Image (tube, one colour):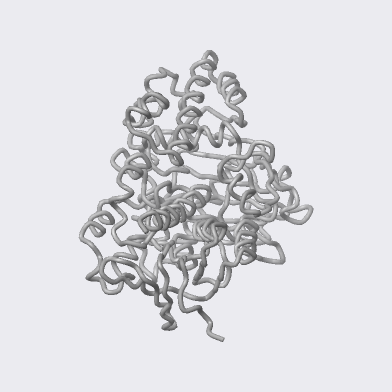
Length: 510
């Protein structure tokens, strides 16, 4: 029996969340799908690993767009519709903000969040609530327009708030609310999850982030993020998808402007009508298209014109005492010496010391995640790829440990406890770890930066023109939505929809 079939409807490169989402949606419509994954497990950075007999979350802090069972949001509904049964746990708060002059924990719910800000900055409740309701309105418009595109006159009639704010930065819109700086500081900590300073971050992106996380709260899988990818892969195979691991795709085969298959590292040529790539366009258009003469000039210009967003550096600790005994009191802590997001963004260009940290104690969201009497605590920064590209091989180990110690020392000082005295296990993840494990371009986890020149609204308008090779689609953090695991699922679904729409259009012409 041959390892591969003579032909598939679709080949999906990469078995992470985006690729598996594409495969599920296509299989649900009866297509013959092959997924090729370079690693020995599915998931990409949605994974876990074991140290000292303890399973440890590799990357996921919180998952957006899930919602409770009785009121699912789009990603949660997709999982349910596809029969992917995940045991979701609610994250207990939005975040604890540790900022100059502020130590406050804020919780989900537009009104509750607004009242908690008002307790810290009296007299701001009405303005903060009005802002969050505006975010929620824009968020709902984005969700509807992503499924039902409209003409500009229709959008203005039905989605006035979306249209009126779409051309403005987050800073420009926030300035119109005339809020005290202290209140603005409490509205800013999530900025790191989209990776651009407020003067260059489109308000549309900020709206989606705040409405989703603050309005509806976030979730985590009880069995860590690998539960998502493993159950997605299991369900895909039940639906007839062929998934093959340790199969790296080296080339995407193209002839006369149309993709017709792939070649793996071991030399297999596999043919299909469509190819969906989780590899970044940077890699695809510079080294994976065969022959390279099939790469249109516009594809090269597009790649050169887009700015990579953030990568990640994390120190994950398993500590020998319960969190409360180490003065760790919250699930999520955002800690910085300023909330000037533009200044913080500039700081992320280097190798530290980093001025803004994200800390997670999973035990507060998932009490059984570590053995009794211990806790899991991670400290993460999301640097730009610029600085880490300059680290020479001979300096890597030294730089990695210097940055890790800075992060641990900073939080030890904050808690008044030397965390190093309580370490059972310590794992350091760097941009190089991500690049090596997942193949992500330069270790980038957030795709292309959302800026005033290049963001989801503009990308939706140019999406058709940027389908440079017929039959080739992209699914991953680098696709339209960007920024995190929830959007990766959305991007996978979008790539599948493009394939299905193209098939339907061709059938209609017959």
